[in-house]
Length: 319
Image 1 (cartoon, rainbow, N blue to C red):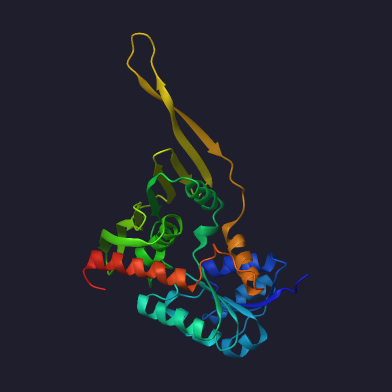
Image 2: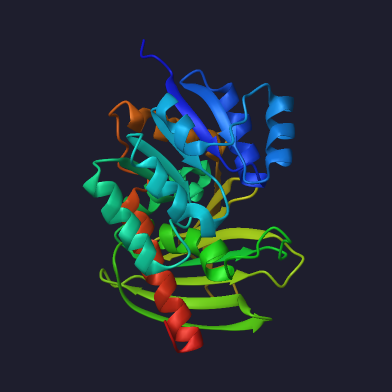
């Protein structure tokens, strides 16, 4: 049996604490230390979890093989540059950085250092999304896929707009489910200095369409994907992890009544697994050379940012 991967965790905000919880439970991970820019906060969280908090990340990187970076987006580039000098494996929460140009630069940097990078586009590991991809891959009649993602704006999000905070997940899924994109159009509104509502229409090279809506100006939290196919309609509820398929079954006529279309509806059981656990297991497997084709790498992170940039340009008129 392979030894656990020696790993460090940078960032102990909400997402970082989720990583701490899962990494502490995984037999494949040997969590050696954690770090947070707020030393008092980080020390308190580390103490409660029974993990060592370090102040000097550069020195501590020599103790580990891999690092998970879950710090604020504006600090990602700094920590990536530190990490590639010491470790062979980097997990970076999405987006790679807050801008396309620096995301490309970080991709090129990890390539130059031959570092394995996985980007935290977690929805690829949602069991409902995994099932939906299997269904769409078996259909040659997909017309469009609609994505809706809404969330009340959080005080913790101060450095990225709704496109790079929320919509990026569904942009990545659109690429994952429907392939390369040839055209992007979008509109949106801003509450204050950042875009808080955006809607985009993506045209794919294979003729499919993706319609994506992301909002931080509503109290209702929604995560849905709906696929319109000539042979079926697939409804995927990501929060409840439910997938339902509706199909036309034929025409029916009763005496004295017009024809009516009959249909069937089938709810498909989804395996109840935590997406973050699956995501980190994929990263740890990648650290041991067992790379998953579905795990988003640096190229996938840049591809999603390229579309984010086009959406922002379409809305704001400038890159």
